[in-house]
Image (cartoon, rainbow over all chains, first blue to last red):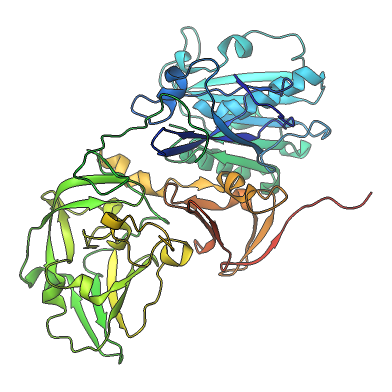
Length: 220
Length: 198
Length: 97
């Protein structure tokens, strides 16, 4: 949670660039998606701590309340959900890629929006589900949101066995192309490429598919 | 300087033997300006073109037949990591340029994939540079510039062009890929020449 | 691991990563801007370009022909924006009324 004096508000899907400067002038910078709608001057980031990462372990454990942090944003004008758009929305998330999509879900909830939303969320194991409580238990205000979680390495007992997300899964848990949904795909580069290709193969209009790839540093 | 965040140090192991602003790393970070070219040694060629257009080419087999050296050097990346005592195997530029007659003072290095970098010709000579094809006893991996890269350890490592394919000898300096985007034309880590104007 | 090395350098980011650096250059948000590649003529949003080089600079390549569309390097005192690979850049700025 960060307090940013003068924060102008933001759209779901946007991110901030966090810049850390040490006392001797060394600088490291990383991008983090905003995880929730603006709450006055407070913004929320969800940071995946990577063991040997340079920045994430520090953000995850080295900061104390009141420490100053340099933040630039809100950034991004393409990978954003605008609440006035009535199109159904398909969210496809891989691992930590769920963060900006969660901002969209939370914004929808806050505004009482009735826009139909479907989330297809791919994770390795049940322990890897971000926002598990919120996503696995229906929240007031989430009527019209459908969540499907797909496990690729280890699945919860009693459910289908783990498998990678296939085109058929997106067809089943997504929207048919005739509804012209706006699709947001976010996660590691390889995942995003595969999912975007699958959506195009299912006849979704490529111009209606917006992607955000984390790339090799993936927010470490 | 930006807002200092107390307690932040980054992943660093600074030492007085390093050039200013550098820290020592024990891994080998990969930084690329584009997709990794995949060049087979059967197709590989290295060329030297002089200022008059005269040209010498070497195939992979010809490169392997030249006298080989095994330099062990420290390398310094402009992104601040330094890796000490890296070991390589390859051919000295003194050997490759031995029979070239030229009045040129500058070189423009080019690579498979389109990367370029420039440096004074004298910085390639007198035991300062190699075309290397092995790192740490193994054939050089494409991610690190294989099948062959330039190695010029006394300058920042962006001058050690990966996937090297040729050298053009020039009478006038011509900025390469990073030099034309803000990086220093020479790039001496000991004088911290990272950017234009440093 | 060797397979990591095989994948690693080709894992590009996309042009959403340019939003911050371009924020210092343009008065309006640029990731939705439309670029036209000087290499092959393909048009794409800045957000859809393939971005390499993080750490040294940002090199945004055309997803079609791989040529460099734009480069941005941040030195301590300057932002170097090289647009020679873009024929044109169209930025949404909002109109009258």
